Image 1 (tube, rainbow, N blue to C red):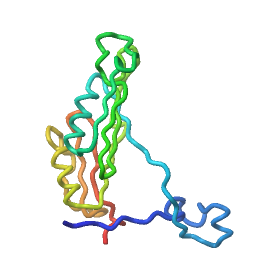
Image 2 (cartoon, helix red, strand yellow):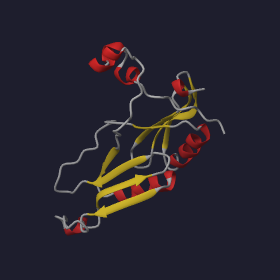
Image 3 (cartoon, rainbow, N blue to C red):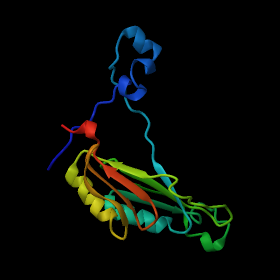
Amino acid sequence: MRRLSPKKRTETDLNGGQAGLTAAAKAAGSRHEEIDMTVTNTTHLNFRGQAREALEFYHSVFGGSLTAITFAQMGAAEDPAEADQIMWGQVEAPNGFRIMAFDVPSARAFDRGTESFFESLRGTDIEEITALWARLAEGASVRVPLAPAQWSPIYGMLTDRFGITWVVDAAADQAA
């Protein structure tokens, strides 16, 4: 198994060097004070009637736990035909993967847009990344095959069967 060492996050990393340091860090003369990462971001995908299927697919790829709460369960179904659609759903895996999904009710405007975002999947274990890629690729359109790239030990891009574009890689600065 080829494992890349995770990078420690410092004030310099997060804020771009001396210019980004807080006044307290400048006064202390420290450019490399470690910081506890207290926030995360989670991609929240919007669908029109496909959220459950997408969540089940991502759960089959990444494992972990799947939570799916319907509009009916929350007493929030405006249209009885949409009662079993997902008001809030999430897949959360022990390896840190998390994604949320929601079915936009027909009473609300919905336009996915054209490449309005990519979902980035970055890891430290090349074998794990490759296995996740293989599962995501089922029914997908591979845009860039998973392979070494100038900037990364491994990189690929695909659009999955739900129209979500994934960039999958290992960060070059994490390579040992």
